[in-house]
Image 1 (cartoon, rainbow, N blue to C red):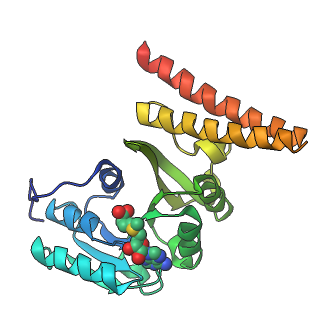
Image 2 (image 1 turned 180 degrees about the vertical axis):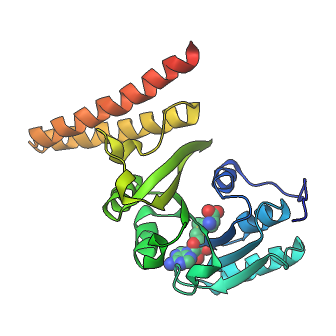
Length: 239
Ligand SMILES: C[S@@+](CC[C@H](N)C(=O)[O-])C[C@H]1O[C@@H](n2cnc3c(N)ncnc32)[C@H](O)[C@@H]1O
């Protein structure tokens, strides 16, 4: 593969983290590609051999096409109109990125492509919302979280999940639905965990006001787990 050290543009922190999780030499399907920057950048870097930049709407696909031409990536990156993975064949991609969409839509797209459970497929998922529901869905469907990292693009903090079908290794520990594969080792991960704890605290207060004491207590246990993860990992780093 031809190596281009400086493709002429850079990805933001969020898409860079997605790019980092794509395997070298993989054939990629970027679902909901919009501008197409992620597959173009990976191809220009020589990190992937082929990519399909897919989107359900013509407008984004046109933008992706223009960018592919602009950056001369036609030999590696093609566009495709596709609702989720419906127009992608299993043999066309090993690594599948689904980024910048809500967690529920990501789950729907995965559910509609049963072939993701075959072979050595990897999913790189960057949900904008409903991260907890997405982790629960992955576990129910037998997808293990191999890695998860968070990244800050102020004012937001994003999480990126690397998953593969492996029912024996789905996460199982107290608070796993909220923590996923995060270790709390970086400031971004601690920020994510503490933000999530603050959001759950609001929910717990609401439950208490509604007289749902037991549900509030259950949520507070999860909040404590999140805070402990964030604070203990932070101490490790300070030593
Ligand atoms: C916010 S953009 C994210 C672009 C890029 N993936 C990123 O993370 O920067 C979401 C894109 O997903 C596309 N999209 C929404 N639903 C989709 C579906 N069911 N299948 C494929 N693409 C979809 C939209 O058309 C839009 O271009």
